[in-house]
Length: 135
Ligand code: THU
Image 1 (tube, protein in one colour):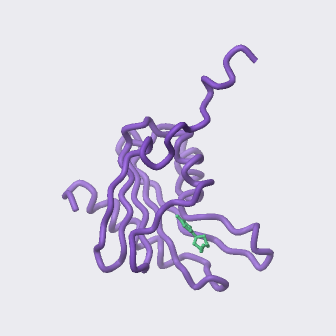
Image 2 (tube, rainbow, N blue to C red):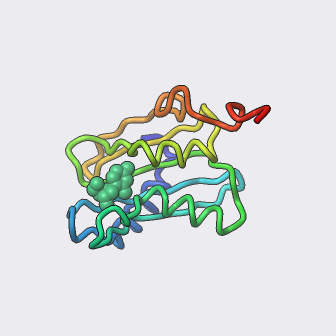
């Protein structure tokens, strides 16, 4: 893993410890570096009414937007899974709202198995505001 992603990894691992995941027992941590260089983190927050749970990525995005930032420079997701965790479909769309196509998303496991994909690879053909032009 490249050196500059290690700070995101440390932040994501730390916030993952706070995940509220009593139903899946699957804790996820996410960290975003915004264009300003600041790091924002989030963990999954499950709910007894299962569909009300939120993903780690959603938490990190909410923290970034609450701080007044709207541009993602890079993102990282970590879980204790056999394979690097792949952001769910909804989170890909949420990340795409604030990311250019070349933004790198690092997916990694606690054991260090890592995969890096760009936003366009994660969500090819994403629905975006150009699709609504003229409406
Ligand atoms: N989860 C995330 O937080 N992010 C992902 O990228 C994949 C899945 C959470 C949602 C739920 O709390 C748990 O992992 C199991 O699906």
